[in-house]
Image (cartoon, rainbow, N blue to C red; front, side):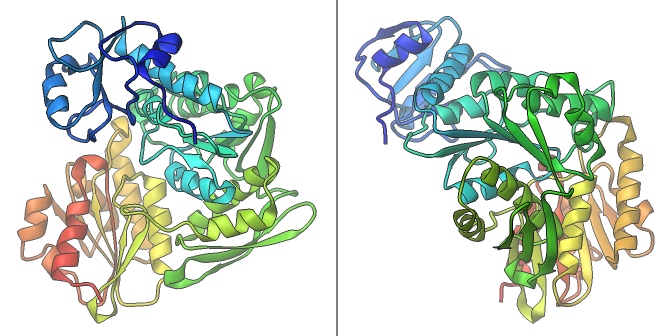
Length: 453
């Protein structure tokens, strides 16, 4: 593994000047004093609040050095640059450019991009961006600590407005791409509606190196639209579900995950994954196909996919006392992801299937209607009861009809006589919601009060 850049080396790549010891080599870059770790460099960004005001706190928590746009009166090495954001982005871009592996993958999508990133990193044995560092701050911050020595790098690329993914591909040009789907997340930020979202997701394809391949589900009409655009003509678009690559014999293994055969032009590749739900089998198929197209061996791809375990908030399953199940899908929510995860819940054996949902966000003027439609679809899918909270709780409940209970916030959901305490013993429970509503509080309460088997 390659040593991280020293300040002296960093100035050659990002400009600026060093005050103090230029031989200091931070263990990484941090932009948040709440999560900074000893040995990291604190980057003082100018945003809603000026990061320079938090430099002293960063040093108290163990920052070894500072990146600033003017010298501060502290006795630690300081890299002084005109623009700390631009410098951090240049640092990450330079790190990848100098230690570039044979395959760089970019992954985006309205739903499932983080799970697919994890699956693709498993399939290739690659380095991946940690957590949800998928924007113009988090991705270069993560790349600054890239250790090198891998055959693949898997980069999650998120967006909430046009141009963000384009900027990410400028910093880290991918060789290969994945678009998991094009849905309605962040719809309120796009005057063109879903076509605007498709165009913004398509920035990943536009940013692929010439001749690069990318995969998508053949059934996704907006991904097909991307493949037909002139700015995608320099790439190879490979649909999964068409004549060459498709999922066959998909079978739920209940709590153990999913099993399927990936049919390719030359052979069938048996795959098992620990993640639950047909949607996760679809994500694994995308990961497998792009890994194979990049030259990774089939047996290694299958073994790597099988080793990927669910993370908290992203499909982690808890067995509850009395034979119940708790499916923790709390990281975020959209209409498509809620229904996909609810379908995965129904594949489990057990008692009454129910949902506890926080409201969704960034759906624009259609938010009430989308919540009502989601509630209605959950009832048609076969869920028997729904507890919901947040600003659109009543809309969820209206769509679901009989068996739904709506609450303004988590506290009345937790404390009310018809709230969480009324969930029947032995139930199969899915918990999901937007980050804003912190649905993980529901999981914590249920684990404490319903008990883990």
